[in-house]
Image (tube, rainbow, N blue to C red):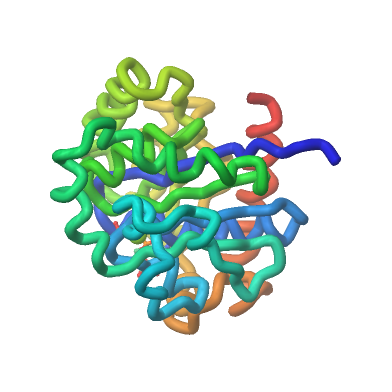
Length: 260
Ligand SMILES: Nc1ncnc2c1ncn2[C@@H]1O[C@H](COP(=O)(O)OP(=O)(O)OP(=O)(O)O)[C@@H](O)[C@H]1O
Ligand SMILES: [Mg+2]
């Protein structure tokens, strides 16, 4: 059998509530539904990816915090989900303190990369969800990844802070992870009835051109309901406009990623 080496993609944007977790969950579900072996890494103390796949309480010894602390490893901590081909490395609330605990470590930015290295050959994709900050957890995500996927909410302040994010990506590329690149920008929570949405989308496209995915994710209440049921949108309501949008996005993501 041909050995795999996962493509590692990190979802990052220090702005809160822009669709990082929703995209991590549903892109992973779509890729898994297409037969790709996917690992979701919940590197956010909020644990929204973990609960989003129905893991409302993570095991106390098998989670990413214990991996960061060197008490466990990815192999022992990865768990299966209700979806075929989709596994998760869950978060636990202890992760809140990890940034402080990491500070004293040598190679503190490279911990996640080391955690994931031994299991990269078991997946086609590893998708990392990050908290809304540019702290050490996000830096670890950027250092562990091949590329960054940036979700942007179609609202007036979407571009605010984006320069700082792009700068941070550039810095990580220069110092910690030379191969890092921007996989693409995804417009989320698009509201067809709101003229401002179109203007914001246009401005982002003017700035970033081809880096912006053609697929936009509409605002869809089913997408916001599904996590509370511990389900991805494919399990919760696969006929919803949200599910259709993420399936379309998954196709575009795969098409583009093949060319890179
Ligand atoms: N396309 C959408 N339509 C409707 N609601 C959405 C959509 N995308 C995300 N949401 C909802 O908006 C909120 C924020 O989304 P999400 O949690 O994915 O953002 P985030 O960037 O991960 O947030 P944080 O920065 O707090 O981690 C959530 O309640 C989510 O269910
Ligand atoms: Mg989130």
